[in-house]
Length: 516
Ligand code: NAI
Image 1 (tube, protein in one colour):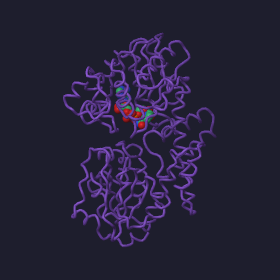
Image 2 (image 1 turned 180 degrees about the vertical axis):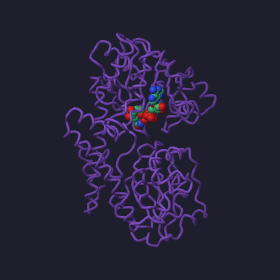
Image 3 (image 1 turned 60 degrees about the horizontal axis):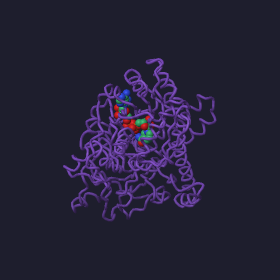
Image 4 (image 1 turned 90 degrees about the horizontal axis):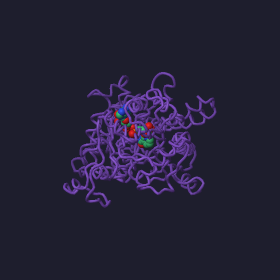
């Protein structure tokens, strides 16, 4: 048995933070230190306003980071977990990467692995700079025998790259390398971590590899049934994460391709999804037609898979997976063009409201949002304004994502075409069209502007999907937008005042907008 007393988690992002917190929660005897070079992020993890929003995350962090006495003193734990009265803090956040690595028995590598933006393989290959940097720090400073765990999603055979880096800096010293891909989804990260379908642990077939895998399995066994902890080979483990994301994304592209056929016929993609989902061989998950997949993982992981296939001399395999991305782009493009067509093929002088920027509900992660592609296409038409409201994404994050459009559209200028606002009513005021681009319940369950007839595409989506276009009409019913399920960092929604109702329901500036 390899004793694990201190774990260093490198990378305090969407994976590193929640994963380390849950491991710490269930292993109170182990000291878990999350390190990051980003001082702002670490400061936020130490504060009462965590840098990422995940339902349940605050409770887990408070208990593990602050200990029982502090939680009781503040009386602010809402968790259903019974807290051991003697529980001491065992979760820490720090920018002291090297000092923490030096003490660690195990390093979880949870750094970002985006797509390369320049050089060989740009647009498809994985940018390994952050991972290599973290490995170099470990190689130079870790104790001999420290177990290295790949939590980041990486191309197959990255384990060999890590071993090579270790060998180059510390020849002859054994550092077991494990692959332990993370399958959590943003928005349900804590639930996914608390009750995982499976925990995959890939190791090399050596004595040190198996011992290291057993040590990691013991950590998970504190709360995950052993039957769900799957030991496999390290290369299979690395590849299975890419394969899982590719298969999930492929289902979305498949149903979206069917939605395109539905729009040319009188078939209803919602009915089709329901029918085929009843087949147990297919199942109902990931069969909702919509704007296509977004988020920081699916696109980059499929790109990585296609690049891997091509590098291995398998162009047919690469082309197969590339088509999943092509279909995703097609869907967004189609949606945006439909918006333009339904506004008489011109956005000049028109105001567009966008409700929901993040790629799905319950996350404030603004990365790789389908909204960005939609906005890009709409901006080509020169609208008067595009006003964005999202319950969780900060204005700074949205603007950072939009900065790729800066050169062409000056989106950051105060008098530029894009505004980010902190309430949905302001976003919708005087709009010619309201685009719902994320599946927040507050949008889905609301009945804004119900007297307008939805445009064709919205009908095809049957109102059941994240994507909808709603038109303001001269005489719509009173708009009601429900409260979000969790308190957002943005200002709370106030009840609709009569004054605001008036502002929300103007005569449309362009009468043609009502003709759909
Ligand atoms: P992120 O970008 O939110 O966090 C990564 C963090 O690592 C950043 O805060 C960065 O400052 C830090 N970092 C980079 N190099 C460092 C170094 N040398 N030393 C210290 N800190 C360093 O990324 P996220 O979303 O947490 O993803 C991490 C990995 O997990 C990626 O490989 C991703 O593909 C994978 N993944 C992500 C999921 C998600 O839902 N976001 C789900 C499953 C896997």
